[in-house]
Structures are given as structure tokens and as C-alpha cells.
Length: 278
Image (cartoon, rainbow, N blue to C red; front, side, top):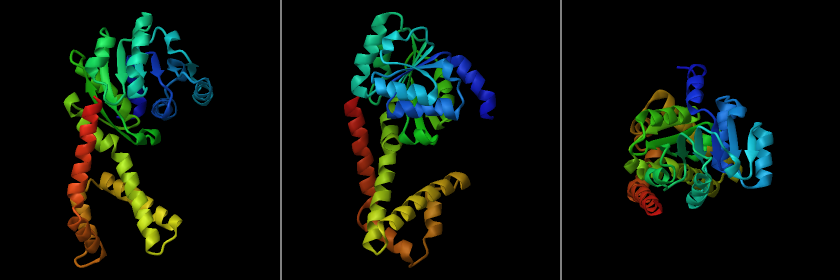
């Protein structure tokens, strides 16, 4: 189904949208909505406390932006893109106004449970989303969970929305910390791999620029190949590995150094920290 057929239905259901927080991820969502999905800027208002940032967002995306989100009234959907440590204060402040009473609350604040959000906005349908940084390039991977008592159709609507900015998956909330350890933190893992490959390339005679280009494009190309041809990573790895060749030498060293166990323990550490933050 093309975007041109699903957009009107999505945005009719979402109605007037308030984006609370215009930081890095808030802007990524805003850019995806306005520039990527061609949402009418008049149907969204942004609450961003820093005046210079607010002016920038207004001028760049042609949206209304206010420095005091408490001025925002009569919205159907509130999308919170504030830092987790600020969520409760911001949300409780808005809820206390009495005039900020959205039908639907979507939050991307890591570690803030749907139960917590529902206590602040008891009349709203509550949906929690964990997107990742590539959302800024319309290539995000988002996971979506709904609160107890929230219609599953609301989660499906939000999955459809975030799929316009990459891919999205509806999961049970008790799995969201595990997903965070893979997709939420994952961009940093892959960036580290590029960084270390570039460093290693420089150690064996390449310039820093050459090594960086080789490492980055190899990562991009491999991801694209896996995605387009639906090859499993194990199959691709075997296809690239010639017996007794250079790739086998490197993979054997990875194995002897406990690469698989290292990755597993790193993911478990990220998952544990997500649970602590919750």
C-alpha cells in the first residue's frame, strides 16, 4: 500500500498533534512527519522551552512553536519527545492545566512505563515508542507498546505512523527493554565498529580517510544486501568466507577472542541498565 493512500487515514485519526520537546529526536520526528510524510504543518504544534530552538523549528518546518507547552490546548494527540528525567515534571505540569487533555498520548521517553503515563493522563489512550537515531534519516527501527486498557488498534496506528519513518514493530511492553538493548542502543554499537575498523585500517597502512570510507560503506552495503535479498546473516557470512582465506583468518580470531560472548554480555548489560532506569 502506498503512502498516498494510508496518510490521510493516519492523520485523520491522529488529528491535531502536539509535539512536546524539540530536541534531537523531537526534530527527527518532526522532519519525518513534515518533510517525509508531507503532513500539513498546520496540524502540528511544538512545545520547546528554548526560544532560539523554538524559532529554528518554526522557521525550518513552518510549524507553530511555543516556549510554554501549557499554552497548547485542543489537541487530539500528544507526542512526548522529552528526556526521561524530565518527563514526569513536564507531563504533570501539562496535565494540571486541565486544558491539555489529549485523546492519545505517545511517549518516546526511555524507561517511562505506560503505567506511569496512564496515571498522569488517565483519560487518554497511552502508547509507548522506542525509536532509534536513524529515524533522522527516515530509516529508523521503532518498537511500540500499548498500556493496559488501551485499544490494540491504537498501537497499530502508531506502528503505521512510525513505519513512515523506517520500520516499526508492535511488542509487549515487558520486551521493550530487550528491544532497546538491540535497536535503541544498536546504532552506537555499529558506529563503534566503524570507528574501530577505521582505526585498524590506519594501523595497517591506509589513511584515516580511506579507512573510514571503506569501513562505513562496507557496513552500509552489507546492511542493504541483507535487507534487499533477505539473506540470513549466517548465509552471507559463509558466502564471503573462502576456506583458508583472509576472512576466515579474521573470523577465527574473533571467535578465539570470545566475540559472540562479548556481544551477548554487552546486550545483557544494556538490557539490565534499561530495567534499572525503568
